Length: 282
Image 1 (tube, rainbow, N blue to C red):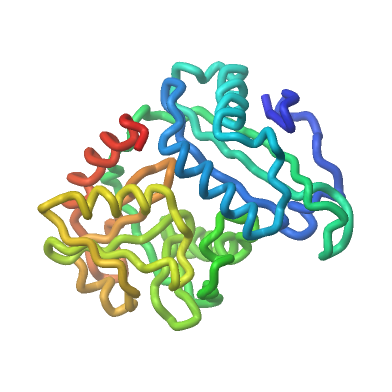
Image 2 (image 1 turned 60 degrees about the vertical axis):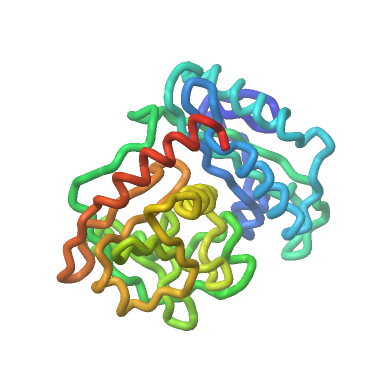
């Protein structure tokens, strides 16, 4: 079942029209949240990021869009899909209502909630082959819009097609200064010795929730040093480890970039700490 503005519809029922602004202009935002046994991982962070993003895009935030209201609607949708006691991937999409061309006729919004069952209740490390390559056909802009989770993801789509055509598991995206920014579907971390490095938001990377939580974990650790600085492509092959983070997978180690094969020792250490944070809900 799909939840559209509080009403539940079968997945195969058409509920959007050709005038939908998310379809026509990419005038939409989304949050992807992991839910396990009724607990939404890092829900407050997702909620406040969504509210901030709506303000930046000048969307009208409905009075009922409280933290509690959206959480309840998400859980109701999960329950309708028999996932209340399971691990679930949730996608909450917010789009400006129909009308207008580039300039909208209204800033009022609608929402859709979708759910899908996951295999594991906690973040686990995938130790299989995961080779990546740089995608340099097009670039990420260094601005605030790039840090938002909007549906304007054509760069990510084209990079995904490139990865499929060339047998890569993922691609790393670069910005207009030719610095490495992120992966197609998550933030990038580079490990060298006890230093864990990730690009700053000013470079154009997504303001990821798990990125934020993992940075907090690393900063609180006496074992590692966190560095938030631009990453040059030349650094990748000198690293001990590379890994990607997002809200559904948690931490995905990169096994190979060009001729360099990487370990995943630090990723394994950090995933346990990330799971602990998720269970605490903070």
